Image (cartoon, rainbow, N blue to C red; front, side, top):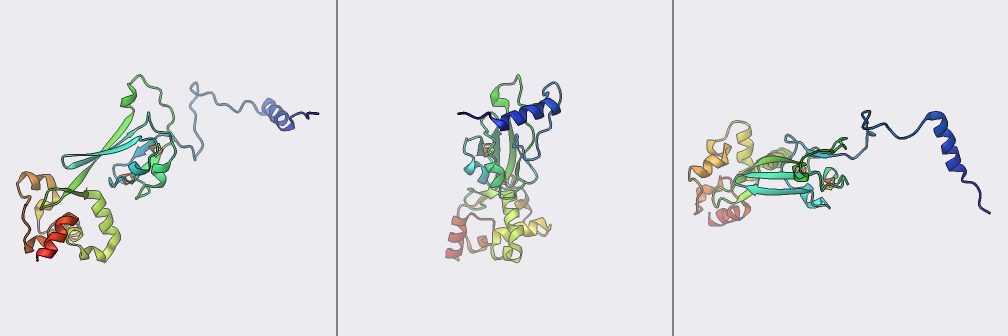
Length: 207
Ligand code: SF4
Ligand code: SF4
């Protein structure tokens, strides 16, 4: 014998008294619950361009590419599955956050449903290869505290932030490259320069 579904009956009676559970969206605006996972958005201020979120995104909605001396991070909202992995694994915990935005109705092409931010890159002053985004190096140097002075690249960035840098050109790497200052050969003096790990090793061994 099958018993009546008492729980469903109770909910039906409750709905008769309290009204329907559904909202009247889009006739009336809808405010999602506080923990609702809506459209993820980058914060230009808090993102350091490390790319950790790109590595964990299961749907491939996040991507990054290096163009010239800039890293471009992109999020495609038409591909995103709103899992929240990017926010959970963000290095700064504030670089990308899921908003409460859920309404994607648009007449634009789906490729237009995206956000892009640019992060300037730091280039090795010897070989011209990319080291890391400028903001990422600053972020690391801030967390290391006094240990920053154990690495000449980080030390130069710290001094630059305090407006004490001896080399004004390190403030603008593109100006540095355009000025033809990228060196091909390392000398002892090059140890106090902004170098990639490979050139740093070479400079230390040569001196
Ligand atoms: S919410 Fe998930 S799918 Fe969407 S961008 Fe973040 S990691 Fe990728
Ligand atoms: S700081 Fe956060 S949002 Fe920015 S690239 Fe790194 S993980 Fe992604």
